[in-house]
Every structure is written in structure tokens, then in C-alpha cells.
Image (cartoon, rainbow, N blue to C red; front, side, top):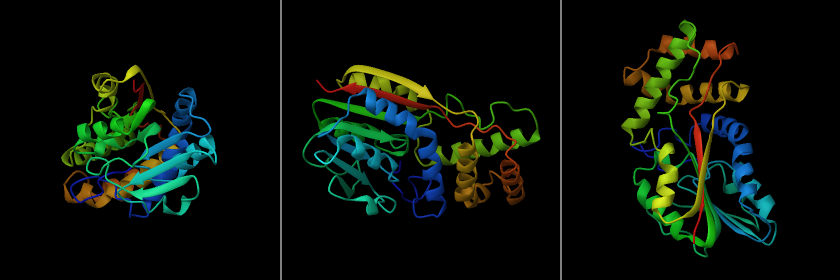
Length: 267
């Protein structure tokens, strides 16, 4: 869930306390989707998996449950603060830059990245290295956001609270784009996998429209980027306080950007 945590790279620094809150909300929202795909791909005991940009521990742990003691899960990230404590006989945690470092050795039956490549500046090179690491017949599962497909935090913009929420979400997108994020990347995944030579490429999309976890995610995200929203003139402190108070009421229907999952098989 995180790559390129630099001043001019990934916007949501893993070192901030809000990162753990965000990871928990993202896991609640998207782990069921991820593991539905993992199970459909037939990831079972004894297999080797590479979790790219792991961020938190939930996906490495879930993969480890599926591959069992005879399998291996390599969890990598530039910042391993939230995964380093889960390393054991099955899970290996490595500090790693997917666009710059060689893939971990050994070859993999599954390579997975969720909400990672949209933030990586050299996405093409990262994708090449991930495919390179697959064993023959191995599966690549990429899951990434496409804020351009559904840009609103409140799709039902029914009042001033929703309009404010959508304006702040627009500011968030502007900050992401300024750091090299591709806000239309998710929709390109099926084509990119086919062009890279993968077979049996398929894709689907998911986004919740309202959920308590969406409210938790929104509040943590806004707190994490608050200083930048104000310094860049995208919002005032008063507007941010008002928005956070609105979110806390639980009366807003808060959505996420669509997460597009695409997968294919290496010949």
C-alpha cells in the first residue's frame, strides 16, 4: 500500500500516526476483495508470494495462512515500519523499491500489489520487474485506484456538507497529481497486462459508497494531509475543522475511488 515515501513522492507518509488508522480502514474495506481474487487464482499451500508495497500486515498474514508452513510470503516496501514485526518462518519482510531494486530472488507463483503503482513514478519499470519475478504459470494481481472514474467523496451531493467534502477531495487529488500519481491508472491495468504478454487477463472494480470504515479513512487522510491542503491554498483550517466535524456525525455517505483489480497469468 505504500511506495516512494519521499517529499516529492508518496503523499501519505507511513511515519505519521494516521497511517496505522488508514491501513486498518483500507484492510476492512478491501481485504475481502483482495482475498476473493487470491482464492480464485488458486493460491494454496506451498506456493511463493511477493506482496509489493505491503504497507500493513493484513495481506501478508492472509497470504501466509493460505500458503502454510511450506510456502513463502515476501513482503516488501520502502518503509517496513508496519510489517517488520510479522516476519517469521513463512513471512520475510524486506526494505525494497519496486521500481529501482531487483526483484527478490526465487521466483513467485503470485505477485500482488494493492494501491501501490498509482503512486510510483516509474510505473512501467515497476510492472516489468514484477512480471519478471513470476514463475512460468505464475499470476500477477494488481489492484489500484482510479479517482478519475469516480472523483467524488459524496456521490450524492445533496447539501453544503457534501459540497465541502467534494471540494476537499478535489484538493486531495490535486496534491496526488502534483506528486506524480496517475489518477486514471486503474482503468489501464487490463491493457497493460495484455501488452506485457500475460494471458487470461481479467478485471473487475469495487468501491463502497458508504461504510463506517470510509469515515475512518477519510478523517485519518484529511488529518494526514491537513498541512498541505492549507499551505497550498486548497482549504482553510476552518473548512477542514468543519469537514471533520461533519464526518464525525456519521450522517455523510462517503465513498472511495473505484479499486480496479486486474489479473493475468505468465505463459
